[in-house]
Structures are given as C-alpha cells and as structure tokens.
Image (cartoon, rainbow, N blue to C red; front, side):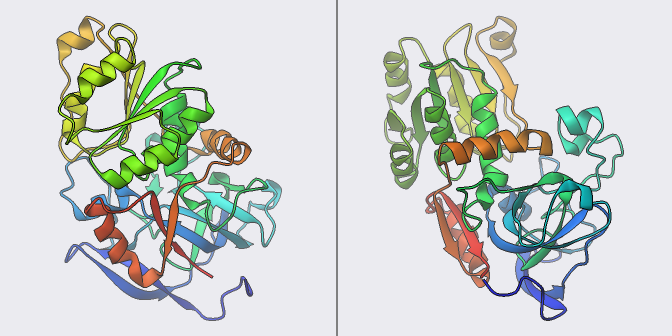
Length: 357
C-alpha cells in the first residue's frame, strides 16, 4: 500500500445515471470531509442486491438522489486518511483500518436511530450513501465517523467490506430469531447474504437447512456448514422432507431472497405455534400473508434491523471471534457491470467486490 493521501483532485467512480438507467465510469472530484466525517481511502467495496435494485422498477419505496448521477455501493472498508471537525474524541487515527455503514445526515441519538433504524431519524434528513449520496465504488469516500469502527484484529481490510451490510444483516437476521442452541433454522437463499447467515447460525449452535434454486449457492451452503440443503426448483418434495427432518417444521425460516414465491412457500415448513418467518429480502412485489394464519398463531412474522452503529459492533466482533468472512471474489472497478450481470444471472457465488490497491 502506497500513500493514503490523494495525489490528484479527481478519481474514477462507477455511477448510476437515472436518465438512461445505466452505469457509467465517470471522473468525479475527491470529496473533503465535513463535520463528523472521515475521509477514507477505500480498500474494498462489495456489491449488494440492494445496489441492483437501482436498475429495477422502484416499487418498494427506494429513495434516490435528486442528482441523476450517483456512485453506487454501500458496503465498504478502507483506511482513514483525514477527518473533519468533531471527530477527534472518537479515537480514529490516520491509517486505521475501518468499516462503516452508509447512513449520513441523521442525528444518531434519537429513539429511532438508537433502537430502530437511521432511516426513521426524527430529523427526517437521513441520506443513504450509494442511493441518495455517492457510495463506495470510488477510490475515496467521506463517511460519518459515528457509523464507523476500527476493525478488530484478525479481520482483513480487503475482505471485511461485505460484513458492513451483508454481515450485519445476516447476523441479526439469525440472532433476532432468538433461538436456543439445537433448534432448526431454514436459510432461504444461500448466496451473498445466506451463506453468511448459515455461518452465523452454525456458530450460534443451530441446525441449518439451506434452500435455494442455484446449484452454486447450495454448494456455498454446504461449505458454510449447512446440515442439509434442498434445491426447491428441482426437488418437488422439499417441503415434505423438511417437515420430516425437523419433526414438524423449522423453528425459524429466514428469507434472504428477493423472491415473492419463496415467501409464499415458507409458511408450509414452519413449526406451527412457535415458528418464526424472518423477513430480510425485499421482493419487487409486496409479499402476501394469510391473515387467518397470523390471527390463529400458526407462525409469527418478524423483521430484522439491517444495521445501525449501535448493532454493528456485536456482529463485527462476533465475526472476528469466529473467523467468519464472506466468500468474496475481487474484481476491478471497470468490471462492476460484469459483477451486476453475474448477480442478476444467479451465477455468482458468495459476494463480489472491487479491490482498490
């Protein structure tokens, strides 16, 4: 690694342009940190399915930038270069290896910021990098120091980026089910999020069934420690087999996919009366639930907070303790369109990221 400080005033960035709904490799100014911000030299930025949602019909209320061009990417890690005012007491030093979340311009102190999600901050001013402000598929970025942390010993800065969205989301999708050791969990969707969910579930002492339609995702599920896997497209009896394996149904089904059908299929494998459907993945179309099932207590429906500065640290420290990292393939910045194509075709295994040297 050479000098952290930029040697020029501009940098290349992969930017989404709303005018033609395409990605463009643009030359843009290197930013200057504002109050509470760190200037970070990005080590790795990884691709999340939420990034791909930019190119899809916006039926789920995705808030976009008023500027037609915005750098995509909201999973990142890197090195502290400099800081704005108000950061001195937070303990960051130049050269620190850090990870960070994408919320900015929120207060970080209200009830919603502390206990729900920064999206619901009482100021109503929250912006998400990668969507309403420039994200991380660029060499330098300014992030809010209050939503950043120094990486624990043992986490590689070039591999840690996926933990700061996929990791936190998967960790809490599993942990927030509140299952005791030895209980059964179905992980629906074993790709970029799901393979991490399986690793966390196994580290928490759960028995895990991986469900997917892509052979490479099921291979990742096995490598991540799943006790059983089923291809729900090819195996017509998968629901019956899950019920038999678990003696009545899984104690929780965590859905990491953007598939409405997978949500429709999930209740059939959940243990009646005590089982949980954990909603994580966001399909283009609204999911449908049977009101009678809910009213009569057939199963419970929960959601999981996908990351604030207050629940970020437990995930990252747990990951370091249990040596949990995403299966990550590195690409060049120019190859981000290829990464998106691989994600859309379900041919990717694990997570894909750009490494900046």
